[in-house]
Image 1: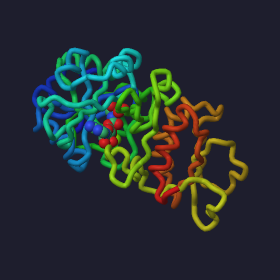
Image 2: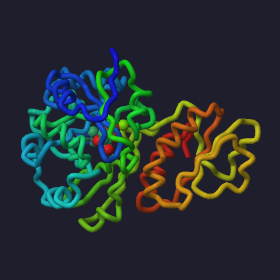
Image 3: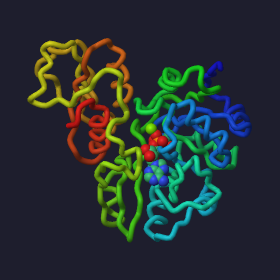
Length: 317
Ligand code: TXA
Ligand code: MG
């Protein structure tokens, strides 16, 4: 299959989606691989293109709020408040699901993860289609999420018919995923909507990764480059390797590394998140044996960045 990459063929994207094909689309977080969420055969093509295991459920993106009630049951008033504040935007909410959502989308779970993207291209396509889109990140399973159309091409060339190029994505890390239980907000995946922002709405708990994850997105190894990646710490010895550094601080000893990428020269966490995956990808392609990554301050958006770095690391940290 030939993969076309273009900027403005939104009508063609809608036509393909109506025909049960998959299309890669930009969102404000990362690029998604979209298919009609109500068509199990179309959704199956997402799993095939990504080589994604069927136990890992997909996020359903909604065209408007009417669809929220058609696919989920919203019984917690707190959920309504969160949606009012953060939609459209990078917040995904896990809710009890209605039966019209195909099992393949939720991996048979009784819940469904829903969000509403604020990206103008994504919104234009989904509103014209008038139906929800199932859309995971447009990378091969377990790999680095794409923040530019070229990244999608590198991951899925020849497997999907169309990539709509909307430039680089704004946030650069995937949406924050929450579940609400008894008026408490559980963060299942850290993201652009921070713990501090959520804390204005109620008690917040960051659900730690368990042996048996509720959300397979909590799998320990994810977002991984092909080159081994280690978190920088004082015990790490790199003398016998050619290494690259993904740095937060200005490197003390730059000569130790073949390549260095600064996450943000001005130490701005927004910039660091927005460029994280592109820089990881660049270092992965630089031909080194090892990528050493520095953690960023564990606050605000830094929590999402460190979560991605730890999951990309080849050894538990
Ligand atoms: O920003 C994003 O969320 C991007 C863009 C494309 O929207 N999407 C994305 O999808 O990151 P994906 O499939 O790469 O990650 C979705 C995560 C998965 O780890 C999945 O396990 C979790 O959401 N998830 C989906 N349905 C769930 C459910 N019912 N309960 C718990 N976790 C769920
Ligand atoms: Mg993903």
